[in-house]
Amino acid sequence: MQLPLKPSGALPFDPITPRELTALLAEANALQAAAGAGKLDALLRGKNFGLLCESMEDADVAFFRLAAVELGAHVACIRTRLSELSTPQEVQRTARMLGRLYDGVECQGMTPALIRQVRAEAGVPVYDGIASQDHPTARLADSLSGTASPADRRRLVLQAVLLNTTT
Image 1 (cartoon, one colour):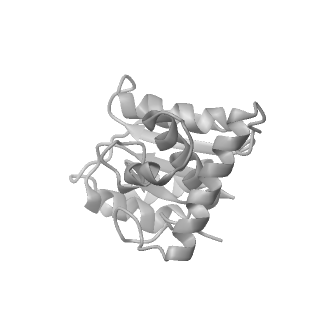
Image 2 (cartoon, rainbow, N blue to C red; image 1 turned 45 degrees about the vertical axis):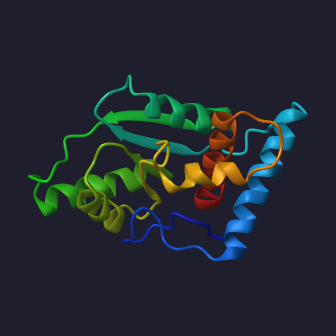
């Protein structure tokens, strides 16, 4: 089942049904239980993510990398040269290349219009700052049960989204 952040033109993600929301939170709770038992598997082994960002030192960059790598994925940080001044052909070529190289692409610090263009051409999930504390998925972390810290709950929700949009 595809959950939030389906690769469509909506930002930050398509509306999800209550059933999809329940499934996402159940996945995050299952990840939390597995981590607590020391049995967190490399569920994203073999998956590759591109992380388009300006600064490799940003906290959101580190947060995304941690969440993905903890589940066995590889993350390539890429300084993007795309901007609002890029030609449609340049955005199209870049997005298609990203889609061939990666199973998903996280965009940080890019305009919604540019992300929509990349999303339309990439053919893989393209996220709009999903690792940010301001992203709507961060608020879902408050719905998780258990004693994990807020940052850990946020990471678990991010991991659940990654699992459900790239598998």
